[in-house]
Amino acid sequence: MDLFSMALPPCRLGKVVKSNSHCDYVVQVDDAQDVCSPPTPEDCGFGQFVSFDNDSRHWAVGLVYNSQLFNPLFFNSGPRLSSEPDPLFTPDLVQETRTLLGVVLVGTLEGEGNQRYGKHGIPRVVVPANTPVYGLTPEQVHCFHCNEDGQTQFSYYSHLLRSGGVFAAQLAQQVLAELVDSGLFTGADQRALMVLGKELSWKNTLGAIR
Image (cartoon, rainbow, N blue to C red; front, top):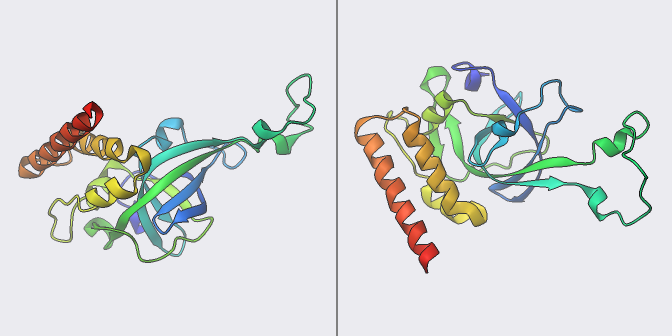
């Protein structure tokens, strides 16, 4: 696919299992029962940029804003075994515990090949269930933060603060800090990101004092 031809092979994180709203999706992380090389915890971390892609098209770019461990056995009040179940005889029990990611959609990648650029905002289309989700490489993150003219953009900032969950402010601050530290931006673009990050940090500090 063109999305991944410019960088390292994509790291698949999991697949879409549900949505909470038009721009809020739940991704089930792959484990050892699903794939031979499941993603590491660092691949699925808070603030990770991800891409929703299948064989037919690129659907959206999102940010991991939350995570949840789903374990239905926690609510089981029935009789308990005296020891841990043997995976050989109870394979279904092994797969019950899953890691779920909350992902907020922040735009799409447009263009082809090395001419890709980001279109920020809420995607118009609905991402289908079971769509694979991949982590973005630094090069793809840089492309997403450039518009069609090659100028740096961060237009999803206000949308992220509204739709990034209870940790929205911390998420935006972390994303800004990582973009500054990435070395992908220089000159006026780098200074603009630094100013925006300091402004948000100041607002978060005042909010904590109040």
